[in-house]
Image (tube, rainbow, N blue to C red; front, side, top):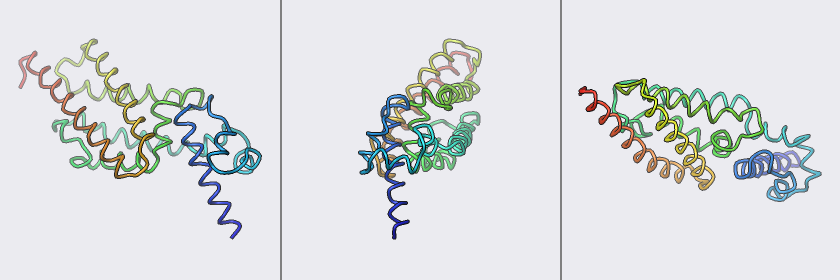
Amino acid sequence: MAQVLKEDLRARILQAAGSEFAARGFAAARLADIARQAGTTASNLYKYAPDKEALFLQVVPPELAARHMDLLRARLAGFERGEAWTLLTADGSAAAAGLLAFWASHRHAVAILMSNAQGTRYETMRERMIEEMATRAMLRFPRGDDPALAFVLRRIFSATLDTISAILRQYERPEDIGEAIRHFWRFQLAGLQALLVEGSRETGQT
């Protein structure tokens, strides 16, 4: 029975730590606040993690960060194919559905990777995601060497990460996360599709 209680407390600590790191970032998050959210004391918290960095790595282990990049790249592969971007939602793409399921299952960790990993080993992850999204998207445009378009796409995908991170911090239930992401994807993908169509017209392509 005691071991069950310990596992329950560990789960509450990780939940509280994920919430704090996602909301405040690594540097600003305080162990005392995490312990209070978890319903324990700061001294008891050290039984589960020797320091804040060790606790952070329990919330966002390297294998989780690597798995997220793999799933993101699988979803971005759809950007390079000839299919319409408006079909790349969770309902129309298995890769998008897999990515969405991962986000819902690891919402705090993903929110951290997308927008609040400064001061950690993952602090370059956000820029890597933006660069990969923009580079993959540029492959679909007739003028793939347009620096203005590349700049705009990077800004679009920067806002994408901010929006998804905010959704993951706001909602807890997978169905609520899924509904909010679907709303956002419908808006974003329609805009990207319109941008692609307009680019094709400018170069005389169909």
